Image (cartoon, rainbow, N blue to C red; front, side, top):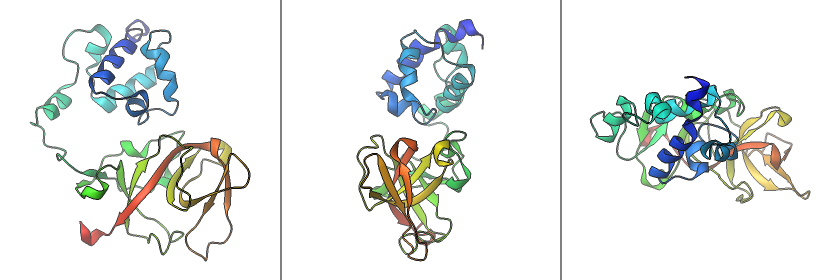
Length: 228
């Protein structure tokens, strides 16, 4: 793709987003950290970067030729087949199980939600979640044990936290890119939060600046493998 072609991407990305009835946050948060940067891109006052354009195209299976020229099919053949139910790679209902350890990922570098799911779980109480992930380690015992599977849903408004509940926290480099599942508690200092293990053997809290959190997922619940 050329720089001249990318000048026209913004308006067409906006067309796709509105057709899907998605907000900026909903459409771009799986792809990039700074969602607000896409507003000037869609309005034509800023050109999308080459790497970012490639990520959007890949995530939504967009036909790059249409994105550049406005001519042809909007989506690639894979997406068209999905839309017509000819490619049965995903169920009508269900949440992807992604067999990764989130601690291996940095919110600055990789998006674990882009990893290929092993399968999909159709369990109605958690069907509003973004993913199922395996539990590693024993810091959250007895709440979550190693080998169990947790259901997570991303939190859009980080100012609304259910204190005492478990969250998957992905922080930036100012917090050493920490990625962990912990119970969250309110700190006496505004703008700070407490991360605490459920396992009493793990003594000591981690104090984190709320601004250091790049992505936040609430743990809605758990299932065991014999429930699948």
